[in-house]
Image 1 (tube, helix red, strand yellow):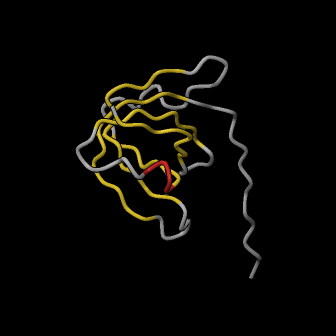
Image 2: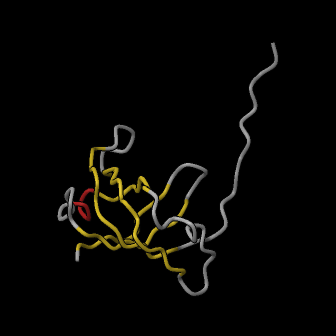
Length: 100
């Protein structure tokens, strides 16, 4: 049997500013210092100087990893603004998230 080969994928530097509503928040079982925040996205705007990988995100839900200390003010039903980036094929990092 042949060994399984893992393909490495490099992600282009990217950022977007999203605004929306928190739908759900839970602990990340793989990263204890992070929370998984499900955001219903209302708007997604490009950030100058970066690729926008979220131009079609408005009207969708995204699962965003947010550092636990930044997630303290977030709760389901609250409006939120986040600067996000895709760090892998299925991982979205919230570099900064604030409630409105």
